Length: 193
Image (cartoon, rainbow, N blue to C red; front, side, top):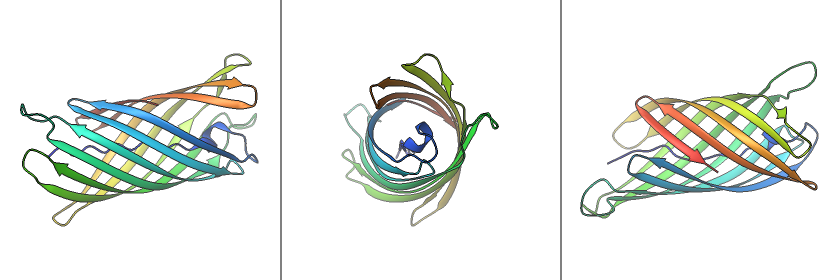
């Protein structure tokens, strides 16, 4: 059974200045070999320093020649703390994230079902570049540790992610396209949201 740790967490505090409040909703898709995923998330940021939110992911895996082998649903509440915000005196921002994820796998091929839970801890370093009045970019480097727990074993997996956000300002709203590539051991996942 394929285990894929896919859950996009949207921390809109990454995109606002300290002292501002915001809310966000987003969606993303991920592709990994024969696994296809869709993630939806919503969150609230308080004073640009603390985010809380909820993310849901749906995965389809085609592992055999008979059709869809595995369907997975995952739900993850999360919190993000924005420790340092980029300013004229400090050139980067630093944030820390923690989330819990409950994921249920159902196999349509052999009628097998399994539930897993995960705790993920990590952090990001990023920098905001203003390209023009309407557009800016924000590259990120993220490192996370994920501990998966099921009835038979406990696994710890580390992942490194390189990502880039393109931010478009239209009136007082920001629209963000976030692309990423993450590496966890020999697994590589591409995501766009």
